[in-house]
Image: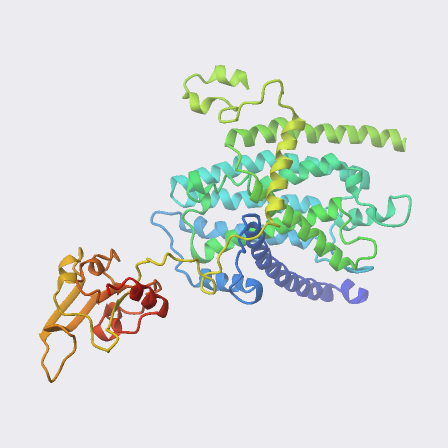
Length: 337
Length: 188
């Protein structure tokens, strides 16, 4: 296998097959995330959520998918057609690209990844920042004031929170000394006083809190879903999108949600290491817990007003993240000499 | 935050302050990061405990909410116990109907063909259910309690024609509980 992987042709075969498998897995996971969200939100509101299509309503997303795919895809008059069509593609592309570098532990000492680059987390930030182009361009091209406002909001919001998000992870890199996600996960086993997984959140609790908040804002989820803001902006950048193009935005949002959940599990909670629990199951459990946290937050908190959002980003999270970096640096120097 | 208020005096008052709409703090307590986080945690706790409370949803086609026994659903035409139709073709129901959805065409009873105990009977009795507003005036107007509104409300169908309820359909037997209730208040 290793020899095959090192062969130039074999390497590409492995990568393409791995990408195809991952695409399938992530798409399926996305569908069930939507189901999970609808059921969990339902339970929070004391209703059952979708439970009609298939057992426990598990086929709901198949039905929704068919319905959305078959719907007429309306392109409004006087839109910038090329950009209008390209925007949802950018959203989906950016969302899936992040999964190129996310490793998944399948079994003890068996890990799955498409690209094992040494700047993994940096790449994820780079492609997840592309998401803002989709939102801004989609809003701009729609020829609709609500879309435009939604797009502008998303631009301002993502720029504000991108910095806090990036800085919140810097202490982790300083401690681990690598941007490769596999190294960070491996570090949870290596760093402690015994050879077993000790999640890094013990070392970087403030970073985790900042990451959690910034990631919700980064994925445009409630209570930071201002670019969509149904009540004020109809649907924000989504207003003029329908059919398959709407589905693509929708898909991208949930893929992003899984991505940040997986990242939180990898960076702060030891990835696929969980004592005796099989790695795949452990990883799955952690991601599902984070997804539930997201849904729980969405079901609890009202949307922030725009100035509140900006104040939280610039005046609270960013200084806190910077202070976190500086303090971590000082402590590291003090401990390591 | 107070500086901003000074800088933008042209804003309407409602848009100005960041604390606008925030409930007043209880006296003697100053807001702090800890109290704010406690408030957020209280919210999270509320939504989490709601998860474990019983659901309020009625699983509709399987379970139905109880309806008043005077519920006004689809119409029925009644018969006497001996099988004769009650309707005497007087058209008072059609006259009382505010939307004019009832069509009655009466015919004379003869000794050889007796349909109702009165002089006349309804040869045609049609109700356009798409027009009907289920006000129950027809039931009030009927001198012989021939037409009643039953409890059924699931009346959807696949074509407009099927919503014209003919005499045959209206003469279907009443649900037993409705029949018993009407029997009880029948003048003896």
